[in-house]
Image (cartoon, rainbow, N blue to C red):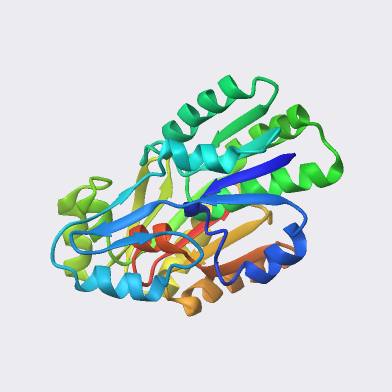
Length: 284
């Protein structure tokens, strides 16, 4: 059996992708392993049952610390169960222990099932880029590529991908040690949005600040062109801000009308870190 195992940072259960996933991937065995989002009073499991809007509101009103936890090894092992050829996609190892957890589970599973094949892809990103890796792997299976051929195609594609984002708050990133707290407080106090991208190591690399969504869209479009984007696939997740997602998608399609562009609501993990109003964009 071929299995696809993604952690929940992939946004696979986004309401904006549900109908598409059902139509395109209904015959595939896709498992999503949830991350955990917590405050001192509440714990949220980032699965398909999560009410993301409620979670965001509770997190915003919470005065204490909030944090995330990667899936346990048992969670990964349960998802691998029954698989003969397993493709695994995780959030960046540069910001999470999820990849390491998936790899430990891989060794455990292979010890019990030495005939199985497991490839773990460290996305060095999150959300949209993870979903695009899944799409590419699914296309390879549909074309009849072998496990090794499919892995090779995707490994060659990944360095050509890029993640960009526009965030209106860095509070949760700063509280969890992902960005400098002084930078985060300056962004919030001045009403600015931070524009950034995923570095080659899978960490957060700020590239500018701006005020207003139109300026953010223009800045991201300019960065896309600078990075060599010429009309490939684009996936955009937004946090309670469909207008911003649409504006970003429309700007790309205006210049590259043949581009394959989707925008959709983020699920729990991406919403926790991008926070209300933010967008994350992945492209190839």
